[in-house]
Length: 349
Ligand code: 1CP
Image (cartoon, rainbow, N blue to C red):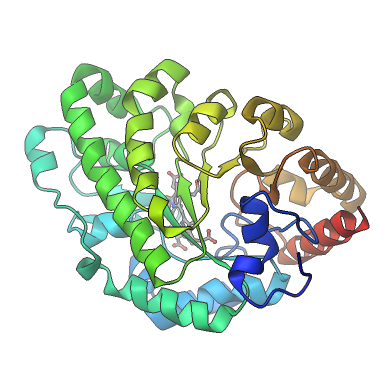
């Protein structure tokens, strides 16, 4: 254990993910790059979201901004879960204020047949951006990521963001064979996207199954687990810790762990101590400050941070994070203060 790591493998984040002793609780924030930072808004001016994801120098700059500003323990690669879908030729866009919108929703066998597999040659801009970043980051680890098959399927089947996932669930239950084949294709795409990032030098990967909390355990086990397992298995041989996260997934935590992750991300609706108890000592945990609490008075926020750091001590490994992404109107100075407080409180022992 060293307080001054010289490589990402020795960093607090990677060590916590591996359930090894750490000098302090590592901290990063989902959605730390972008939206809440004025320097992000400046460099993105006039550039469409998906275009910005395909420009390696810009991706590197945006990824570095929160590392420089907040002193977080990891960088999260600036991209989006729909970038690999765009890369295989699906006609979609990220619409400001809405999110990903798909021109023609995928609901039939013929629609699926039009989606090819992802090969690394389709995403050379990802490899290049990761290489630039790894050189610039030095001992700070880079987290690569992908969307999990269910969450990607939800955007494709619904045609955009959805509250109820009704078309997705109708397809899943109404035509299980087509659902299965669609998710197999998406697992190949997700897995390849993770692998490209890990092979280019990302030290950790995170699989986002943001919307899978909409399912009960039985449906998760039958319709989702095999595919998330396949996506995570694509990097199993690379010695890169895998984080698996979803929103509203208190009921699903153990199943999400069984998909092959070393770290299970916990959303803010679950008491972290309960999550740790449910998961047992074989998993490290990540989480789980409510992003809305970043708007509360500092003493309240500080106490909640201390509670989460203390709860994290009962886990075999703990990475501090929010229980979902940074909200766009968050004051960036509060985020910096959270990082300092997590470090200070956890060093105090
Ligand atoms: O720091 C970071 O995390 C930035 C990189 C990043 C990541 C990890 C972006 C940039 N998107 C994502 C992942 C992502 N994208 C997820 C999983 C994480 C989560 O649950 O929050 C999801 C569900 C998406 C889909 C998406 N893309 C949405 C959500 C829409 C919905 O269904 O509610 C939105 C709004 C986007 C657009 C997007 N992605 C990223 C940014 C900075 C933006 C805003 C676009 C803009 O600035 O115009």
